[in-house]
Image (cartoon, rainbow, N blue to C red; front, side, top):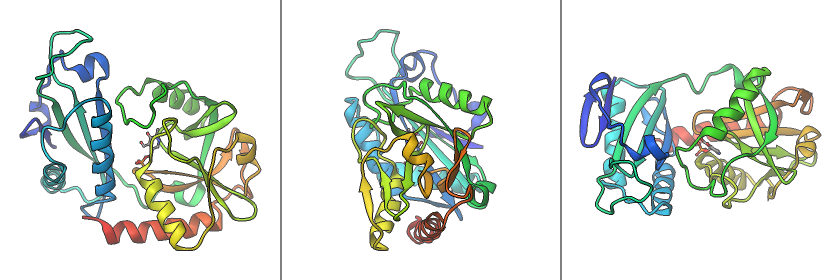
Length: 282
Ligand code: PLP
């Protein structure tokens, strides 16, 4: 693979980064993951807007413009003949001898690479996914897409050990979100429920797109927290993320949701989302 590192396009085994990078030593960095379908970037403008925001919230500064970043992403997609998969981007504050305090003149680190992956036609679309609920052990600024992902790694490990596909994180009795996805339920009278954006969750780019499409379709949205109990007895449950788009959750903690199969509202939104994603891809 060709990867990008601080201005250079390199074969992946030639890309070298210092052990003093603050991303490595402190998790002092931000990341983004953008889907690629048909060789084009999905929801790109939203990912760039969130990147800008996350970097700003940690008092950082992108070394190049988001237009330049998009051009790099397109060049990597082309160089690697990527038709379907992901582009990963990581920004860190830069390289300096280890010290919590940092110099203001650090050159940030910017790394991008692609990953080939089937995203659209996957078994989960037909079968749904199983989630396990567990306490949300993350920090209080989950709206920042920080590379400090240890709580998510541990949550996913615990979920996988019991045969689940994803963890749903719970705080004060309410689901915040998935370990790497936004969480939804559909009530028995057809209302789509997901938390409002706040410091408690990451503002999902896929969430933004899906909720816009739901509104356009005249569906009823309720932005509020919900409990695991409400989800277990809901008509449907879903998750959204850049790497899954929208998929149905058919089992929570071993309890089937609805009839245990992806429901009609999911199918409708999945179709709307995939159509829109391809139409707006760049
Ligand atoms: N919530 C968390 C904690 C995530 O890590 C992610 C994606 O990785 C999401 C939500 C979904 O965000 P997006 O739709 O932008 O991928």
